Image (cartoon, rainbow, N blue to C red; front, top):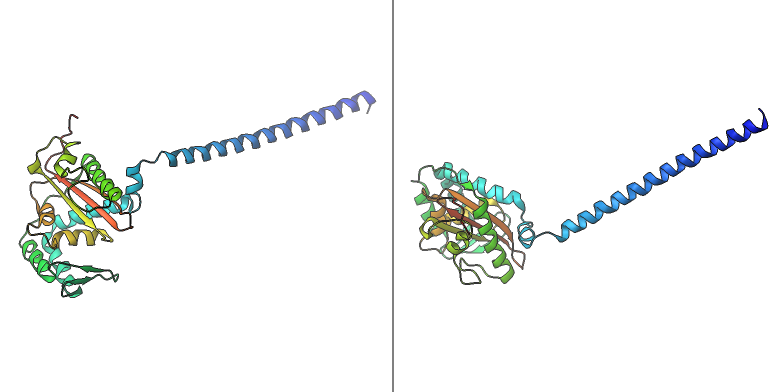
Length: 246
């Protein structure tokens, strides 16, 4: 090979090698940059989580779905839940209810409240299922956040307002068409629903009435934790779902 041709061939190989290495280096830098941006985006999303989402996260959206499913199973066949309540009577020792997971609950009425629930639902007919409402769920989350932040358990909010006020932030509805159920320290959907049906210590059995109401059509659900890590659930009910103009 002539000397000039050899020099040109060597320079050509060097140029190809340099271009290839530069391309690889640029691709590695590009990938590293993209990974960094994804990491920044993830951190940014974490920082932007709202307090409501944080409160609702411990028990997860799946529990909200399970509560709705359990309530609608009951409404489809109220009489079938008499069997669950009858089985529950064996878990009582006077006014102490000991659940299958070992959790002990001090009740006000003992088995008497269970018998009262069995008597009522044994003669109840099937009802149409509740429809999940985003507006009612917002009202439920508002109250859940208030109870969790301010460490109380009551229908009356820390601002002195009642369920009708909270629900009317989102719906145009009268007080007579509104109900709210609360549950504390119940571990799963069935325990929550059975607790509402028994409605221990409530003379008016308001929680049970919510589940048996033929005029209520919509429901909102929120779940979370108290400051001392007890499970907390709120269900709000209404007859219509007409959005508020506010």
